[in-house]
Structure formats: C-alpha cells, structure tokens
Length: 397
Ligand code: AMP
Image (tube, rainbow, N blue to C red; front, top):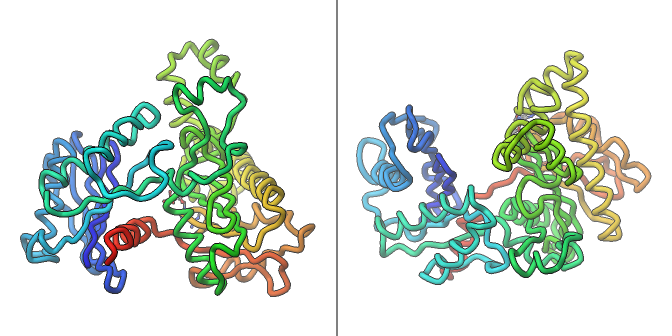
C-alpha cells in the first residue's frame, strides 16, 4: 500500500510517498514559494536530490507538479497515479468537531471550513490541498489527520480559559493544543522503546523545534499541553513570544502604535528567541553565539529552557509523577546544550541526565543514568509516518 502524505502551508507543500508494506519513504519533497518569485520544487529519490525551478501559481499547480514528478520523467517512482492508494493530509485545526482522523467527504470539508475562523492562516491552505487532490485524483481516498485531535481528550479544567463562558460557546475559545501528530507518534514510539503499552505510561513530551510545545500524556492521551487556542501560546519559540501577560497586547499596540494585524505579526514573527537574542530565530545560530559568550544569546536560550523546565514541573505534578521525559524535534533531538539546561534540576525526583549519553549516541536513545528513577529519552518525531499509519488504519489495510 502506497500513501502520499501532504502538508500544505500558505506558500509551501511538503510531501512524502511512503510504502506502507515496510514503512519506507519512496520519495519526498518540498514545493516552496508558491505564488511568489523563485518558486521551485525540491525533491529526493534515494540519496539523489533534484530541483525544478518554474512558476507555481497556487496549490493546485504545486500538487499537479508533484503528481507529475511522481509518475513521469526520469525520476518517476510509480508507473501511474493509480498506484497511490490514499492521500493523507495534515490539517492544522479540527476544533472540537474532529476528535480523530477522518475520511474526507462533503461534511468533513464543511467542518474544516468552519474551523477557518480559529485557524485563518493554516486551514485554508490545508483545504486547498484536499480540494486539489479530490479534483486531480478523484478516485483516491483522502484522509484528514488533525494536529489538534490528539489533545481532544484533555479534561475541561485543562482547556478552559478564565474568560466569560459565553466566549467558549460563541467562538470556541479554549485551549486546543497543536503538534498532536508528533506527540502521538512519540508517545507510541516511546512505549515501544520501553517495552510497555502507551495506556500504562505517564509521559512528558517536549517537542522543541522552531515551534515548540510540551505535552502531558497519560494512558496514551494528552491531558494538558502548552500551546493554546493558537500555536502562539506556551513556550518561547523561534519567533513566537509564547505565554505573556495578556495586558501586554494592548500596551504594545498603544505604545508602539500598532494595529491588531501588526501586533499579531510582531508576537508571531519578531519575538521569541529571535526577539530576545537579536541574532536569529535559528537555535543553532543562537546557541553558537551563547557558547562564544554572547550574553543576550545565552539569556535567550536560558529563558527558553527555563520555560520548558516549568512546564515539565507542572505536568509531573498534575499526573502525580511520570515514567519518562522525552525530547523530540529539531532542538529536542539535536541539542545536548538545551537538554542539559532543561534537565539541570531534576534530582529532587530521582531523575538524572547521563552526561555522556546526552552528548553522544544514535537516535532514539535513553539519555538518563541507569539508576535514574524516571527515564529520559530522545525520540525522533515522524509526523509523516504517523499520518500514513493513520491512513492505513482507517482504510483497514
Ligand atoms: P524543527 O522546527 O523541528 O525543524 O526544528 C528546527 C530548529 O532546530 C532550528 O531552530 C534549528 O536551529 C534547531 N536545530 C537543529 N539542529 C540543531 C542542533 N544540532 N543544535 C541546536 N539546534 C538545532
């Protein structure tokens, strides 16, 4: 069974074709700068990388190009589009309508449209991907996998904000949480590594990348998570501010003479590690400068790591202890420096990071000491594989 996984952003399309007989990646690629100058498709078959530079006006043209490359020309990997058994779409926001993965039909499309009001930047692009595939390969089943679904079993006390209840009823204002597909994949993989069932475990998962979130996972379900109504909430991130005093939004607008749109762009795009360090949103760059002695760079990483630590602490408390602490995504998987800072104060609950294991070794791996009461792991995330597995499960193949 072959599954095409699509992740459509506002100006990009990330894709992977997976052979689900052995869960291998047949090919993967990225369409960039859709509708802009310099649009292109970069793709990989085996170790070879290729680039097609051409005008790509919209998602429809981008997906048509991807489908062409898959089955035509010198680097084709399938003989015809009929070989694609299913398309799995990453959909950012499913609101309270979608608590699990679904097969796309007219009702599902209406539901995704309804969620546009709470995800105006993401859901329209996801929908464009779905509608294009329905036109170009109408006989192939389309499956929607929601980033919010894994968090839908959170108890109400964890998802309500201290705002008038009417706002929840009227607009669906509540904590939703994101990165759900990643947190779910990492939950399953960690259970596998520990030789246990996810239903029997309590985990804190730190997805630390450009976007970052921490999730409390109990018995295989998210019971709390740091991102909220939008992915702006929670941790300090590459360019996002994370949680701040809500009064600051009005204060900044007034004192910096900004409109609502401007302040949202500022909090989403100019803040976080970039805003604090004044260097970059890329953690590697900031870390390099911090190690060389740049004080603002070190302060930015310290503030980030401190917040991760605070979320871990509160989630250990609400779950009455945990079995494992897990690091994933770009920073979580690759930065011993950040992991070391985050794990600096765990000894009071009998948990110890092993210096050597933190710094060296293959992934996934355990990075706690043998006598650590709680295990600490690095587990690489794989959202595409999770989406493809969901497709396979839903089609009963
Ligand atoms: P992601 O959003 O999961 O792709 O993660 C991207 C982030 O991971 C970027 O900010 C990268 O700088 C960061 N990253 C990747 N490798 C490393 C590394 N070796 N050390 C520190 N940060 C890293």
